[in-house]
Length: 261
Image 1: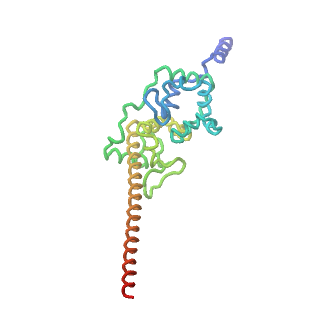
Image 2: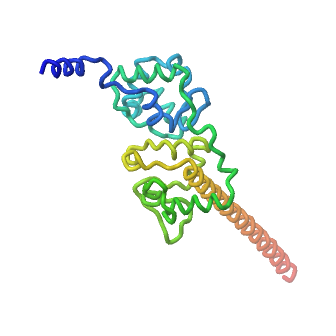
Image 3: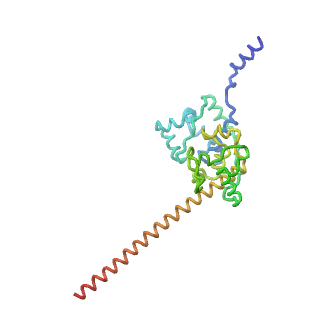
């Protein structure tokens, strides 16, 4: 009984018993959108962040960035606009845990998890096709996760359609950029998806193939949009030329009528 009481006291009095493990937390929660020293990504590069921002501001922003945006905080809204109006999820951390996380970021120990992933521009047709089949569920994900089409649309999937729970991913490649999309797919951190993919995440190969498919949907949509604009302007030019020709014919006819009179 005495041993049990001693252990119980140690459990509750230990200052770090409920604290986070910063490296693991950063990998799971932050790495999908941020780098440390590798340049801006979905969100800003965090190298030197404690020197650029006041610590109290950082702590609150990490804990409740969405509230700060809604309150009209100028720096929060500037970041919101700069990074394509993407809101960072609020983190359920206390002040001490945020400070631990910031200390880890400043330690220089953060490694880029997708530094070696190929660019979608290097994908071959077979890889793009596999990406489409994984997205639509024709091919099953190796760890048993649900297919993307369950919640998302992307490009022109014809009769297959797509789910509406999540956003349309047609232009996800442009929105996140190549490296950012790699991280978003491999380090899933969206609240509605974390539990679903917690132990059923994508392999690096699957992530690359799906990213490559999304690159093609983005490119095709831009080409289609460009063609629509081209046809619109060609039609407008044709219409103006036709009006000009009719105007000339009318003027010639008017002159001819006057001469006959």
